Amino acid sequence: MASYTFEIPCIVISQPIGTFYVGKMTAKELLKYVSILRRGMTDEEQKNVQRKLDPKRQRQIAEYTADPDATFPTSIIVSAYENVVNVNADMTKLRFEFQDKLGEVLDGQHCWCAFKITQPCALNFTQAL
Image (cartoon, rainbow, N blue to C red; front, side):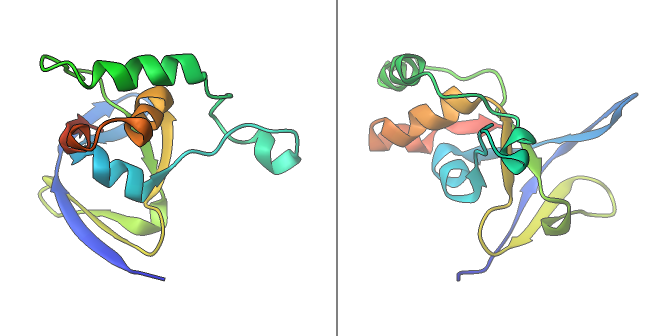
C-alpha cells in the first residue's frame, strides 16, 4: 500500500463547537485521498453520514463542470482522520501522513461524485475544504 505525505496551507476558524481548518485541494486529489461512507442497514453503516447518492444531481453537476464559467464557491466538508493530520505551530499548514485515505466527505457528496464522471480537465478545479 502506498504512503502519502503532503502539506496544504490553511486558515483557522474558531467556533463555539470547535476549531475548523479551511484549505484547498484539486478535485483529482479529493477523489484520490478522500472517501464517502454511506449510511446502510448494519450497525456500523448506521453511523455513516452520507445518504444515498442522487445520480440525477451528480450528472447535473458533472455537466456544469464543462461550462467555461463553472465555479464552486462552497466547500466540500471533509472530516480528516485524527491520526493522519497535524497542524503546524503557527497554525498555517495542515500536514497529512496516511496510507489509504485521509478522511471522509461530510458534506458535498454530489459535487465529489460529479468529479468522478466529469471531463478530465475539470479534475484541475481547486476545491475549498
